[in-house]
Image 1 (cartoon, rainbow, N blue to C red):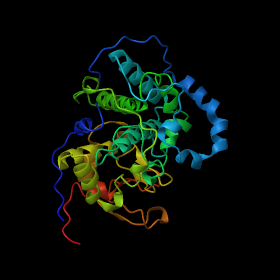
Image 2 (image 1 turned 135 degrees about the vertical axis):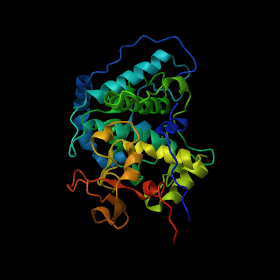
Image 3 (image 1 turned 45 degrees about the vertical axis):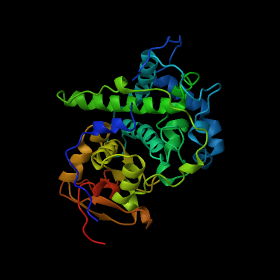
Length: 343
């Protein structure tokens, strides 16, 4: 088959699917929101013993709403003011930006946490098909590609979990809406980091297009097997993004730009490496596309000894040959930029 060539894209198209500020202004509810990293770390410590007793395997079998429990949680947001939206964004950004600013090939906490939050929101809507699923705060947590998500959601990635922020809003904001706003918050934070070093880069106004009202699903057995399998390349992109979600190929390629944040970990997804260099992996920019086209790539088979996990490793003279600095692309990435003529 021949895969459509990747056109000149903006990652802002991502917003058409995942992301949406507030259409209405409601009466602001008085509440004190904790956004400081020290408090979040204390909350993480408080849960530590309970979580260690359960073990990570138990956490992986829970739905997001079970991972993020809240007494009196609403399943649907009936009213949200601009101040409510801003308070959630501030709290999530405060958590992300409280993490150490260090970013090396072996240790980049902000990139890891931001990518985890964004991956949760993305995988949440990727299970939409035939009128079921979408951004409902429920996805198949046993899917290998969801490995590691319980960390930033509940158990604490680099000591900070979204749960502690969500519990401050859960009585009047659904988890489904909260996860979308949290994703927008990390995009805004990582975009601000990019603008700081590239002042001419345009800012993003996500609040103006946000609409609340997503209903939290407490179970979603139908979601099993709906996430795109990277091994299937652009056939997986077509099935999930084009056919199920109704995106164009250009929009699907733009959506893949979320890979500009974070990295893949063998212990989570079975894949290994950065889609970009570490510093760019904590900036919401277009470096993912630059890497696709400007760097050399060769097949890397049986990642970690697993014949079911294959990727592409950077091969040009600028590559980092260390284990921690490894750069890679998945079949679902490379097929967007290159045609394949053959079996």
